[in-house]
Length: 162
Image 1 (tube, helix red, strand yellow):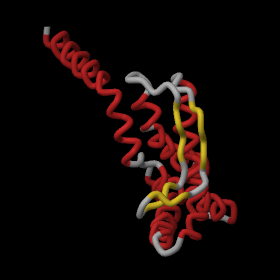
Image 2 (cartoon, rainbow, N blue to C red):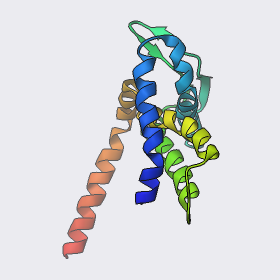
Image 3 (cartoon, rainbow, N blue to C red):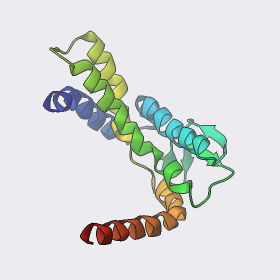
Image 4 (tube, rainbow, N blue to C red):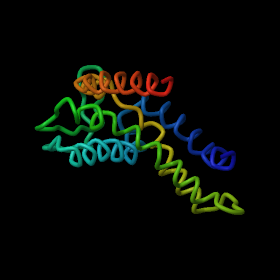
């Protein structure tokens, strides 16, 4: 696990730099395009798999008040059972850098030109995996899952004691 984390240090550092410069001018959003694409594809894919029926997909930045919306996915059938998974799907984006780092650090490794290119592609993933405030509000529609998880956990605990 140490090699994986060490491999990801340049991507994390670059992600921090991208985060700093995107606040300076909208032109710098181009550096976060790969992350935005993965973020929105995660929403779209999970929504499609769970029957949320995605109807719109965009990765074109647009101004919304004082902030920028980098992309969006709209759904026609967001229900209690699919709202949280579809809205929180970008958390899965974190698996991309971890999987690439695992692949590149299997066995003996050294940081080469291919890894530099991968660093440029992986850095935006660290900026895009966290769900937006709108995503969190949509996930609340799945509150019945909390009841199911609590009841299942309590039942398991009681059965384990008995």
